Length: 116
Image 1 (cartoon, rainbow, N blue to C red):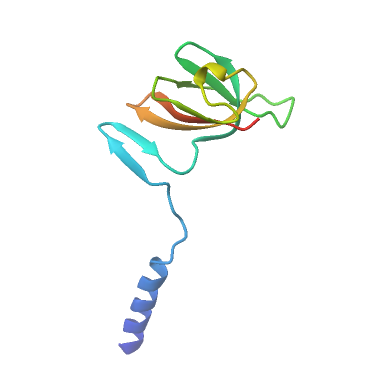
Image 2: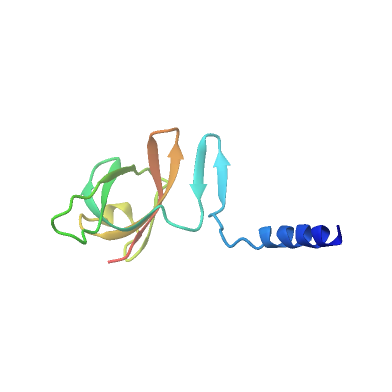
């Protein structure tokens, strides 16, 4: 019986030592925003549109096809890194993108960091 109690306490202690951590999120209505880790890493701007930016992963295999993602931009989108304004963004800029979701389908960029 005493052994079971010690094992039980040991298991509880191990459960509390989990290293998996998720980026903290805060909710605003039906929108969620990840604070620490970018949603898109190692991507480049494939196409710029008036109200969105199309990003794609950097191609590692020239014969493979890669998906492109369209992320909405608005007047709240911040640009950081080598550029600091939406107007300065250009196709082929290497970026990281933080987003918030509006509903099921829409992704809105919160922050775009230009690497190269």
